[in-house]
Length: 208
Image (tube, rainbow, N blue to C red):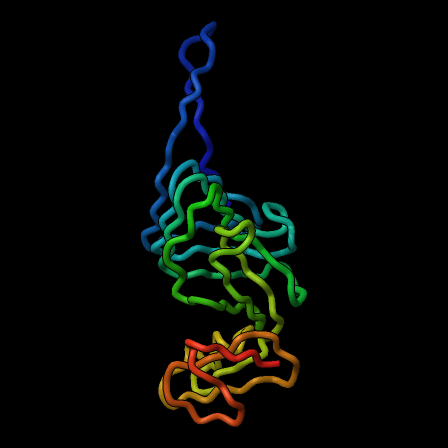
């Protein structure tokens, strides 16, 4: 992955190096920041504003050597899309997490990717948490092939959580849930036809 380092400026021989801190404001306008065929880290001394496509490659669970990571010292503003690439036949284990944007400090991430809460790659589904890690990092969590499905779309959309599927659904959509045990609060904000009882989001409903 491309590096954006702190620059050093040399004067003349015999004179000590002058360290020049370059505060970089990175704006992706329809371009990609990518590790190409090798994973790595991008270091941004400043703010990160993504409006294009951010390519992230996964080949393991260690940042910079197992998967791409963007490390930011300033604010993080997200738009555009996330393009997730699994390298060398990598098979993510369900529950594995990847901090793809490491945001220092305590400032929250602003905005989100076009995929919103889930992204798919190679037949695997990952949830996207914009307040993960130490509270303000962007973290992917693998959930296998997905456990909740919206079969109205072509191709089908797959989700890690029931609530994510409900939030993404439109009028007349069909959502199916694989057999299993789910621990989450599930609610809806419009009229639905369903076989299980859900309640409005202002009260919540723990479904097990």
